[in-house]
Image (tube, rainbow, N blue to C red):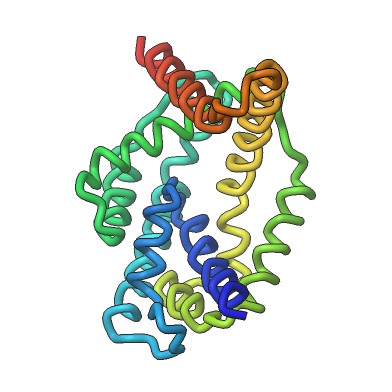
Amino acid sequence: MKNNRKLKIAVVVVVIILALGISVGAAHLEEIQATLFRADGNDYISDDARATLYSYGQLYRELVEIRDDQGSVFTDDRSVTINEEEVANLTQQFELTGEREPYLMARNSLIRRQVLYLEAVSQGFEIANEDVYAIIEMEKEASRNAVNFEQFLIFLEGTQMTEYEYWMSIFDHIRVDLIISQYTDSLREQFLNENENLPDTYDIHSMFDNMLEEKIDYLIEKAER
């Protein structure tokens, strides 16, 4: 029961992270969860947690307005574009997570997503709009069933959006994530197939993670030439 509760709490955290467009690892996800939700399972929401959730909502609203005004940086023209207003917004988001180098993390997060997306598109990966909407419906249903749905509503209040406006606003982010996931999943499958005969002493999954990081570094270097 406790694990199920943690999962339901994590759903709302992930929904917020998806909205903001932050690319965080498991450690950061745990930090954010610890900041917003009590570890003892108590449903009480502290004033600090309310303020943090509301701030996330405000930042997300600003991010949507930036992207509406200047357009998405995720285009198919093979160029990496850094929108400094978006970097500044993401920097504030990472400051809320306690990141030590928020500006660097924000800039790197944007660049990494862009190069992965551009490479995925160049390799022919795509996603149908109806599949994106299906994922959004799944996330929407999961968040409504979460025990801490109230936290999401506080975040939503900060956005000054209706629930429908919010879910529609994350369409492009979900689309990009799905295309990137298709690409990285294909790399993982290929890597595992090529190395299936390695002894069990090898950590094949760590090897793949290292290979992927090297590939991302190469793609960034190529994009910056």
